[in-house]
Length: 267
Ligand SMILES: [Zn+2]
Ligand SMILES: [Zn+2]
Image (cartoon, rainbow, N blue to C red; front, top):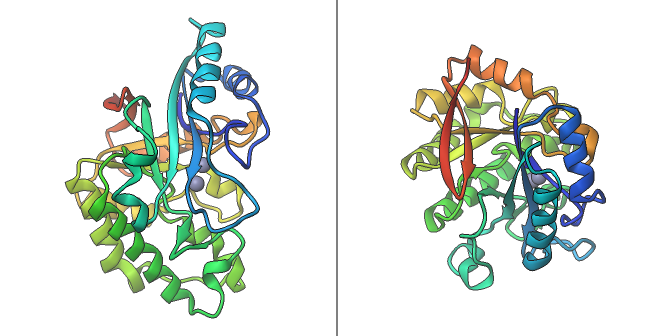
């Protein structure tokens, strides 16, 4: 098992230490555990700080690596919250080459965060979808230093702010297709983020529909991550995710080390 999306207390919304999370992973027999703590500049809410100290992070990670040597492979990653205005000069703020793996996520759209529903205020749901994928496209146009896009359809998780109204894929298919093509052209990937099920949308992120579309367009690079914020959720529904990929006729899952991808054959 390869869990490539896990948080620790270096994330503003997680209180468990790296060691707690490693112990959770060992209980599930996970072979590769990649920490992807949040770095989210200009997040759009003053209440939570999504930036960590890189030196502290690497020191702590190094400690965990040596304490659990031979038992589990621990990797260093970030979940980097991106916005178009950050894309061009992010390198002046943080050097990304020392990490094993970078997830690029959109948590904020036009400066408005989605988690508390700011984006959806005074707006039709379909317009929020267009803004979200449009902004993702803009980021992709100006930014290359990442490996996969995180929970690509995250916006689906937040329709609860709109009385659970939903939008059909057909309504924004052209746009999401453009986004997926861009990802494929850049030789980047997406992830299956298994947390969707825990957050009550009864599907992984992305949905089967989007995974099929990605496949149709030639997409092959997919990591699997639980997005765990506590030790019990490490490896959450991993086998189900692999099973789904097999059903959809994907041949490999992808892992990263030193920002280089490796394909693992789905047996
Ligand atoms: Zn996220
Ligand atoms: Zn996350």
